Length: 137
Image 1 (cartoon, rainbow, N blue to C red):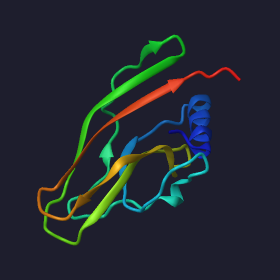
Image 2: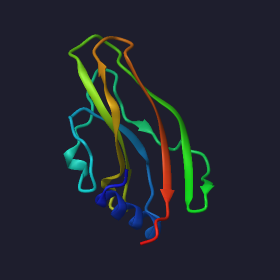
Image 3: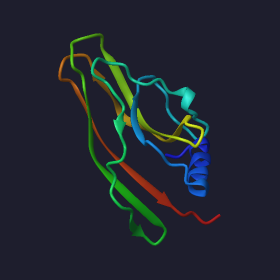
């Protein structure tokens, strides 16, 4: 889902070629994103072994319909590296660096069900897909 902040960032991305360092993050707070969600609303996961992932793994875009383009990434995996306090991942979001080197949000999606991470080798596995569709007003 693209929020209003995300759509703003996409427009900036398109008109000033601002795209840099795409990262894929998990968030641990119980937020249901909507069009008004901003990056500050999300709390990044912190379980042992967690790190945001490189987002440059996407392939070329393809046309999946008359008014839609898509790009699919491979399955992404985050793994806990030690037993610890249980933490839930409620969703994932993508960010990039703008021309001022500030990290800004591109997309955010909530998982159908939260994923609990508590023990060594617990994993979160998700596939990220970008879709863009042209809607006539």
